[in-house]
Length: 242
Image 1 (cartoon, rainbow, N blue to C red):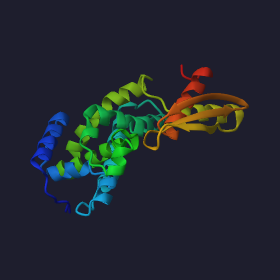
Image 2: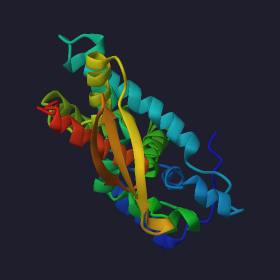
Image 3: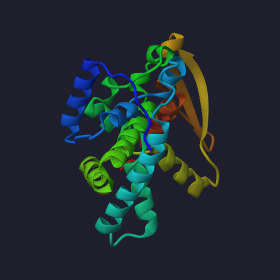
């Protein structure tokens, strides 16, 4: 049973209505949608709002997974299980979900704690991706599986097409690791070279070593992004991104 209830300002109600129009979904219970935007940093700092979107995220992740898996089962009927699994991992990845979230303006509706706000939380991939999953979970609870399925497919069918046509944003770390393991029976070794900028706006510089050869450094707003960037550089140098 959904028990989340709190006073929502008229301005917030209008914002939630605008978002529903943007995603072409009408919530019977707008409180569910509102909850999907509540990050734990907000609930941790506000005693009147002790619930957050993590449970919805858990549910939405499951719904997203089954909808995408079923679609891939149908549209990749001639491909083995391994290809389906690889395609699914890209389609439901943090990179894909966070990109979609920004396109929908999810960052504008997030409820964040002050610390998370100051550290750039509105544009953090993990927070955006989690919010997308929470929105899916909220829609499932509000309107049922078919409505959630329709919403997910409206977002994911174009992503599936990109992956199948090899025009998607690639996971270069995985691509590089598979190559290095196969060729050298080892794994790439990433190293943090330096961190620059103030605490709230850090830039990380990372290198990667492969069989005695070093690539980089490349940078990112966190170590994960920097590692992806240097892995991309190494893949291009090794002609793996063709």
